[in-house]
Length: 97
Image (cartoon, rainbow, N blue to C red):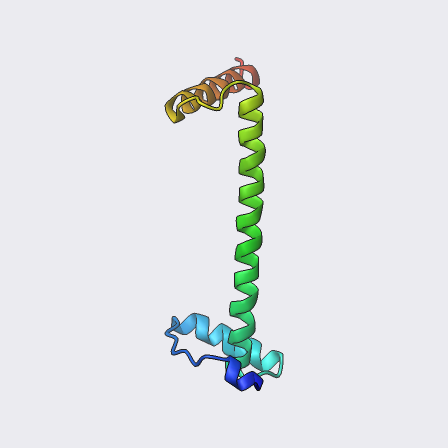
């Protein structure tokens, strides 16, 4: 199976300024616009997966910390109130008159 058989043709609408940026990048990199768009989509998906993975990792670390502190079942309202209280304490300590 050739690489052409492994592709799907897609019609895409882009804002004009985005298209112009892609066209300029294609000229700079001496590529066809279509080829550059394929690369940009693939790289964007990889970056999205990386960011999503990082968020999941941070979220798991946060849940682990909450479990360790016995706060895992704490409601979101209680968490927000605790954060507000901490913020007020920090402001009070940093900006004493």
